[in-house]
Image 1 (cartoon, rainbow, N blue to C red):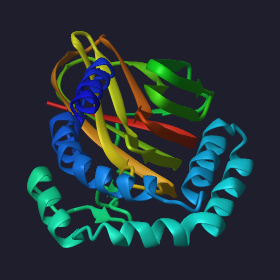
Image 2: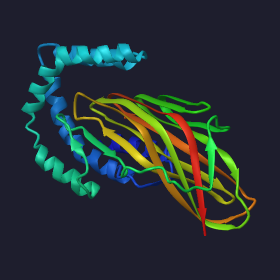
Image 3: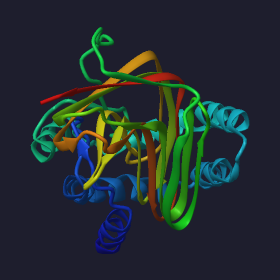
Image 4: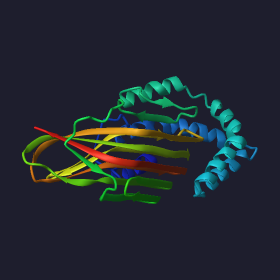
Length: 322
């Protein structure tokens, strides 16, 4: 367990991503506390499965390894469906033999997180999805930046066995992260434009973006740790300032055994953020919509994959005040 916690700390620090978030996703310290709590429970279930004399657990692990190697999304979906048919009853039966108290687990996770805004899955997977209150596009604004946009930024940061991909188009963003066995990957994309501030001095600039967003991911682990998440927000840059504010975040912590799947989409999703400072007329600022995904796997056998998109980014609106 010490090795798992060490690698988890190493990977999360290597892939650290300073930003501001109004979401309630776990911090790295909280994740390490959750993993410390989960590790003996995971071992208890794994020991029961390792004692299987029928050969099904061996087949189950081989099937998971096949899924981990599959790159085609539709084929991967089919393999997960086959996994359900072939192994769900077997895994469920042996998981129940471990007699894990989910209510006690829920209380401990709530204590670690400081809130209970999460769902606990059948096999102790944790899901958090934070969505801000629904907003309407403001009627008053000082400037509108329209698609196609010219300010495009793509970046990724990875460690170990992982693949990162980020593509930013004229009016949309697509990012993907995949981590296997022992690896971590963060992919980010920013799309927007620059704007020269009019005469005057501004102390607050509000940025509003509307787009269609979607996400899809899997997390599974045997005797290890895995997590995935997707973030949607706004990045704003001005002289002396480069800040990203996350408005929506989806997080999944892999179960003790089995796998987790998360997916969703929101049409006409509106994200809004305010940035304070001293912004002088004539300064050039850059406002962008931001999409980010993260996947982390710590052995023994793990797989994490997350992709997210923002499409139909028609316009970005700015409003300055003093």
